[in-house]
Image (cartoon, rainbow, N blue to C red; front, side, top):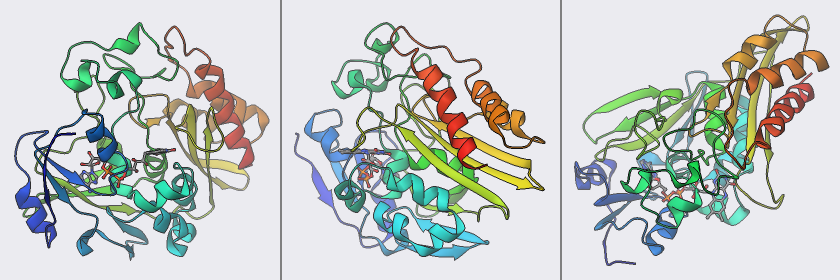
Length: 323
Ligand SMILES: Cc1cc2nc3c(=O)[nH]c(=O)nc-3n(C[C@H](O)[C@H](O)[C@H](O)COP(=O)(O)OP(=O)(O)OC[C@H]3O[C@@H](n4cnc5c(N)ncnc54)[C@H](O)[C@@H]3O)c2cc1C
């Protein structure tokens, strides 16, 4: 690991003034569960680290616009255990509880979980791929067992976050600050497709900090579930995951939000599956149809075709459990 300067600012504005306009030189340190590992492996070599986990402006869970507002530096364990989150947006608590281990959830923040880098082994082994500024994705023709089946190319990473699909299903909004200027973005637009820019996974500029996630209350009459398939049950990243929220009236589906994790470079909204459900009774046939619709257009690589039936079945099972 290279030497670096550690900065512990007193306020959000102080933190923001430390950030430059260039990617890579100055980095924000939240819980460190991703960034420090990357630094130890020389994947990232910042000159300065700006700590933000202690900043009061980024802490805590507050009521807001009928739902909850979660500071970006709130730990995942606080999200899981929050009575407000469990009442207003139980889908998020379910997903956050699936992240890693208790130790990881104690250290990791929700902002860091959304901004973490991909787990692709070529990236993590410092191959000169798109993510490291190169112009090739080694997984496209290499070891691609855990890579994207949807929306892949030119990079085939999958987005590793468990909270991201849940937040997209819930229609959350993120707040982003430069210290002086703020902007709010629907979380669906926070993530970047590799077709837009294969070097990064979100829209944050080098001088921006994710400050807050605003989560609207789940609609009345809705039910939701987060299902995650892993190689190892004890902890692992998702082979595929499904965040599903279904609102029914008189036994008929009025609205559905189905978002997939672990199968695309960003949380993938399965719009065809949502459309397939609307206006139907949520029974076995409707769940199976939605499962099939969810993987329409999938283009598996040489070693990950198993993800197509896995995802199809996981969507159907998740939906059926809400019936
Ligand atoms: C053993 C292990 C198991 C794991 N399992 C899972 C899992 O099952 N599911 C899952 O989703 N994740 C998993 N993870 C990843 C883990 O959840 C993330 O490492 C963690 O959420 C990152 O949060 P952090 O606060 O530690 O971020 P850090 O490591 O501090 O930062 C991560 C990145 O986000 C940036 N960042 C952090 N906060 C902000 C902010 N507010 N604004 C802008 N940029 C910011 C940092 O600059 C850095 O680039 C696992 C990690 C480990 C080590």
